[in-house]
Length: 304
Image (cartoon, rainbow, N blue to C red; front, side):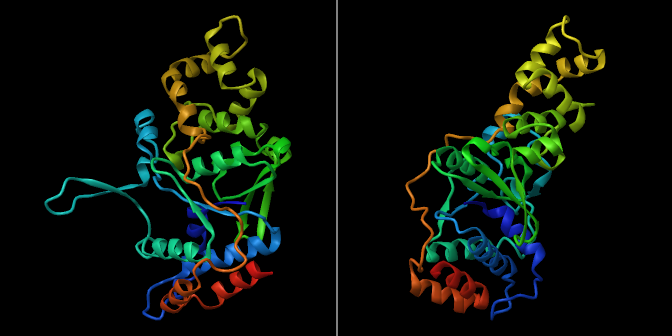
């Protein structure tokens, strides 16, 4: 089981009231909510291995170099006195201080927490899903990861509809029914239609349905680009013009949209721990941050 950790703690943060606080009054709703999520996932799905995949770089420069608008709207410009302009991701003030607590608690529990410099959690997930010998469940609220769905290899996405108690199981049948593509085709669909939430412009005038029709007719992005360049292939003049004009974007978009599958990762133990790796530190964290029932429920599930 691969967790898109930031996606889940964002959901926890907005789903659990910020009145859930540590003894000193600091909000810990994202921390406790994530622990409850993990407990429910382990209880319901019984994974042998579980990895909390992390964003070590939520907006990698190599993606921005290819498409400068990539996640640009999520950046807040800050100019501290006497310093050059810097950029940080816009997150609610009471969430960002909880992230180091989440990391400390996962480490003390012994739940593998994996990331890589210059890569997003999506890339770590793509790499680990590709390496896995057995079935893989990817838990994420990010549809971008639908591109990894592969029935033949047993890779599916568990998409939270309401917390993690109600998950939509995304397999190739669902993708074909909803989008008209399989997992491999989802990335091409996404880059053609664009995605404002990621700052991807897409091809103007080509929405999801048109993109799906083009993929059905020409197989994949390379087939669509070749068809647009070939006057002998049937295509409406407007579509041909749009695709040809979008050539520079279509040349770089696949590298940006497709998750990396070759991220260099340090060795780690993915086995789900039956008991905490560092009980003393975990006890200190539990007391300091008032993790109470949320941590206890997870420890109980892990010990079963």
